[in-house]
Length: 104
Image 1 (cartoon, rainbow, N blue to C red):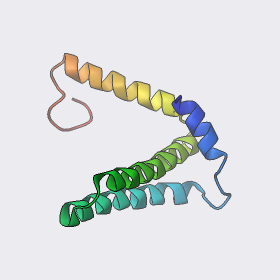
Image 2: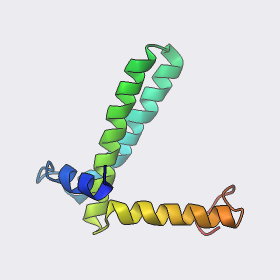
Image 3: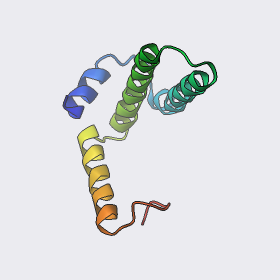
């Protein structure tokens, strides 16, 4: 799927009350749900297929929030993805994948 198509379609479901602050704050909440899902799977185990289904749904919620935050900052998902891949390729070429910091 084209990520810009996804962003446009996902935003067509956005409620008026899902403003910029909501999207930004709830992005953290959705990330927390993924972390909790993983922790509970580690602790309790369970059906792998059910776990994957739940993970797919939670990651979809994160994608929606990322699309909303990007839109709120007049950014397209395709530009974000392209620039991220360019950054990673540059780091690979310079043997700087490992390490920390944005400007390596």
